Image (cartoon, rainbow, N blue to C red; front, top):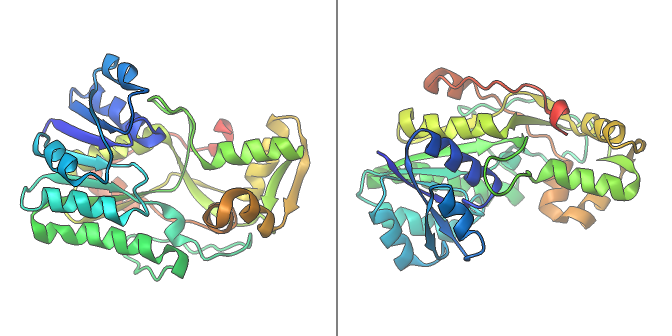
Length: 294
C-alpha cells in the first residue's frame, strides 16, 4: 500500500499529512481544484489531478490508480463527496480515511464549562446542528460492509505550523485576528468552555499510523491536552501586547464567525480522550502545550 490520494492537499491538515507520507516514501497524489499550486506541489514530489470532489467520473478514475484515499477537503459536512468516494471504492478492499471534526461533542454551552470527556465507546447523541456530521461518520464506518477499509479520524483544536502550503490552522488564527481588531484578547460568555487540542505534526503522524495499522471500521479521537477559551484569550492579550482579555456575547461570536463557528467553534466545549489511538496504534504525540504556539 504505497500509492495514496489526498483531497485538501493544499490545506492545513492535508498538506501536513502529505509531507509525512513523502518522508516515508509513499507515492502521494493530490486532488486539487485549480492550477494555482500545481508547480509547488509537483516540485515537492506530489502528483496532481485537477478536479473536484463532486465529479463522480473523476473520483472513480482517481481512486482506481491508488491504494488508499485520505479525504480532508471540506469533508466533515459534505455527504455528497463522501458518497462519491464510497461508491467509487466499493468492493475494492482499499483504505478510506475520513476527516471529521470534534464540534460533534459540543453542547452549545454558550461559554459555560463542561467537564465530560468523550471516548469512542460513548454513544453520541449530538445536537441537531451537528447530527448530520455524526451520520456521515457512521456512514463511512458502515462502508466496511461494502469491502472498504474505512477509518474515521476526529481532530480537535489543531495548532502549530503546517508542513504543506497552508501554514495556519483555523480557530486560533481567527481568534487572534479578531482579538487584534478589538484591541483585547476575546472570549465569549464566561469563556470557561474547554477544547481538547493537538499539534499539527502529531495529528499528521496519527494519520500515517492509522493508514498503516488501524483495523477497518475504526474511529480515533485526536488530542494531547486541553485549554479553556478564556485562557487562550488571556495568552493572546499578553503575546500580542493587547489590553486585558474581555468577554463578548455569544451573539458577537455568531455575527463574526457564523453560527457553527460562533456556537460550536468558540462557545462550546469539546473534550475527548485519544487513549484508543495511543493504545491501538502506538501513537505517541510529543507536543503538549497549545500556549507555546499561539
